[in-house]
Image 1 (cartoon, rainbow, N blue to C red):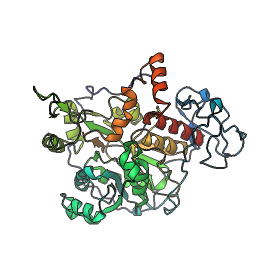
Image 2 (spheres, rainbow, N blue to C red):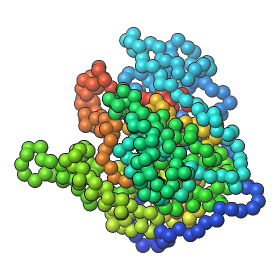
Image 3 (tube, rainbow, N blue to C red):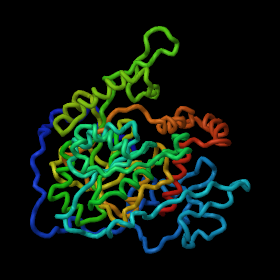
Length: 483
């Protein structure tokens, strides 16, 4: 349907919010934890309506779907000519699928269809089984991935999160050089014992092609290093509120997380707007005044000639990022913060931020309906053997977190929103993989013009597919595999 979320300028300015200073929370208690969720049948995407609602389904057998592509809300005609829910013609579609990596054989006009991407059902074999546990031993590790040029953001993690942090650094230097850089960041220098750091160097091909940035492989590597019972994954450009650790470790939250291994606790996401800090790149014509650009404009490319302005913007935003609900609401009133992402409501719409503003701290409100297949919240979950991994067939920018949430939903995970805590996106220069993703939009293929779309497809799909097209097709194949 249409956009029904809270507009940026309609944030209940009169609502009273608690101060940023979080109350001291005691996490020790006596007694055995009691279950807070009743057992429910597994969940799956409905194939009977045109909207991606969630309905119980029978999972006693694993068979490839026989319904037509149009019957599924997610399956559709692929831009490369294949259909996401077509079974390989050399195998009966009602038979058990013998492999997760079987290629599609035989395409249209005698051409070979692209190979089916490999998908992972499990990979965390070193984790304990997914079963209820004693809440008194439960702890949450903050997990993130950072390229070497974003390492400075970890100082905010050390400051805002007082528990363990699992960090994977994507870069080509030796681990000791990165550790030395982290020691120089305040307050990480005094918190190194809380950091579990791994380094993953890019391959030669990954370094040359930004669309191959192994984002999900890095996430899985970071999660696999977790030693605690639970984890909270955040992209490094999302900073936690200063009370997130305490609220995830409150008595009621840990009881809920420990008694239900398929509970995913959702933390609402906001973003710091960057229209009050400008970058002045050199004028290409060599004359006149340079046109100012926002920090996250496509025209911003990191370089020595702009580094001074970029550093000023970064320091400006660091000082004005919200730490608690009080400062968050103040910045929303001043139109300096909005719900993430105002241009893509579906990405966090099911979180229902309007209700979250009225929710009490340390409470969990179940998400009654996942209203979009594009939902990609940040969640805290159990680090156990049955946890689905991030699918490593997704690289670069786009669809990588969406696919993980779809996988969680298909396995019967339940989502509840945590009251009082949040994460905020920090403005930054667009990555090379994001610019690669935007090639699709710039081409005009996204326009509702059939002739224009046909022309662009003929010009581009003969040689190299757009990265966005590839990732869309991988997502369709993954949903087909899940069904």
